Length: 448
Ligand code: PLP
Image (cartoon, rainbow, N blue to C red):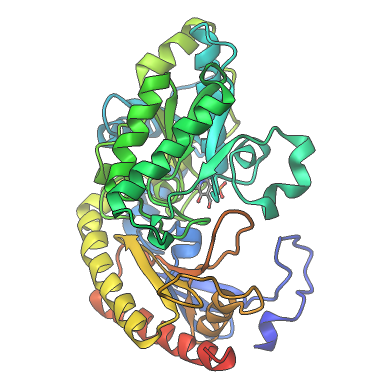
């Protein structure tokens, strides 16, 4: 336990100053440290390593590309891996979203979506439209533009002067509502809050609404009632507002479909991707948009945006190989099947521990939420920091799970479980068993 608490004697400056063991190598769903400990990655890093570590096909593709070139600037040369990956991704996108803009991460992808939406508004003679409505709580990235649509006061608080915080609507946490409405009525109720917000802000000032179809870091595998998705689309259409789906965490087969939004017919206008497309092999992100949005922007002189490493041939060669492995290994199907196994294991834990108020998710993006009372869904007091404690206890036992405490909105303490999509039935059982041990000990410590 001490190794989690001693400040690291290091020149690296990270958010956390906790000492962690030094990683030596990783393969499949496991990592090994220099001192010989084995960890199961039950969270795919930050829900990123979708195809698992050390995949030989991807490593070979990277080696082959490295022999050719690792870099060619996109304004000087086209490159084949970027062309091929763009074609591959376009084929996997919903509707007419067949134009791909590459970046190097999730925050950059979200920035790209926001800037494209805004420039589209200018290009189509709607210069007053600049607000991007977001959800509270939510997480869309750490750079200032992405932060402006992030609903988490712990992250945005110090930087309000540096950016322009955007309007928010409550995230659809229908599972915790205690009213007489059905789930579907609640879904509509949450979607209607978007319409109220649009009307309050003035529809002529709103350019887009950004949401994760299945919640990630801030809302922990939050799935809205089905009615929510169709209604959001209707409302955006009614006011000429673009619907941005942030699929950075929920995309790339994670939830048992290529995109989280593919579980519904919700027709996003712009999609952000990252994490799973690089799968931990390279920094890679992308935005997908349709020609109807891209063309007016190109016609006004081009998109005023770009990064040095955008469309980098090495990153794109790795991304293309990752896509190939998702298909070859049947990972979309495996995510769905193992996700069902995992949810069943988590529901068994819920039977053992009544303070688990909710078990949720789709595919291998799942979470449990701890509450004081599962009937009223009353939250635990802040001093019962059980999410963090379960994370620490699991870590000591060689299992990594995901926990983040968010400031803003109604939010219980959750632990997210999202292993690589190559996980087997046995891996899922082992994850659930260690998690159960960690929860048992934490429950004893907090007298739950
Ligand atoms: N959007 C979502 C939904 C995310 O979960 C994240 C990261 O967790 C980001 C954006 C930011 O991605 P990155 O950390 O690669 O900048």
